[in-house]
Image (tube, rainbow, N blue to C red; front, side):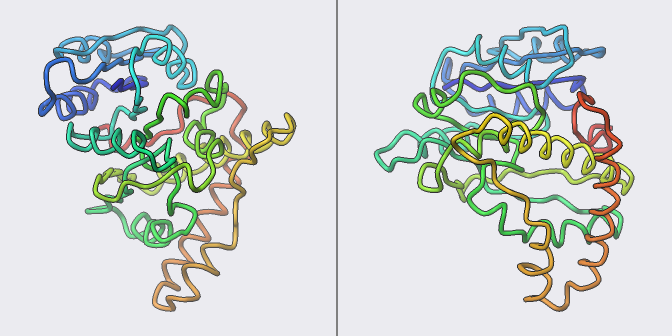
Length: 279
């Protein structure tokens, strides 16, 4: 199978990610392509130092451009799109590939989302106490940092659009019966270590998601992008669990602040990622 990793200034984490993936792999089992884009650090050099990894360099700092370049260089299916800071081992990659290779009709899959909030500030932990229970993440492809597509799934689109919500874009291409969460494969998502970093990330992500929905609506896309349910945190999470009311108040406040930030974020702003976990 092929593994495509889009990496922008990821020198502090890319080596760990690649070594973790390849440690238990058979020779030649994975075609690993790192698309280092717009890097001003040693991302490309660190990736090249890992045996079995091919590196291509893209001048523009753009995740969509990196994904498209990595796609063009990749040779195999199933194909995993892996974020540079997500550790996936060889067994997990095999399980993801198996999920889209059988007769079930599933052609797209993602691992189970696990949120690492250890040692985080109270506001960050409160936010993810609610976020981690949102039904939108059930059987979805986004929010994991890893997505696998079969050859038929990849044929659903030409290129990644010039927008940053790539996982939401992929999620919209498949019906519920065509995608699944592989529960036995965890994807540990490091949450921001500072509240300010959480707000910065939320603002950019929300802006990117809104841009994708607007672009899909304007183009008359046959498959609608999953809509945002703004009251879900209250209706689906907090009301059935009254003990979460304090966390819900924090979630609502941070969400409003992030929405204000999203409106101020210019179009084409750089990668929507959390820098605090890369320190």
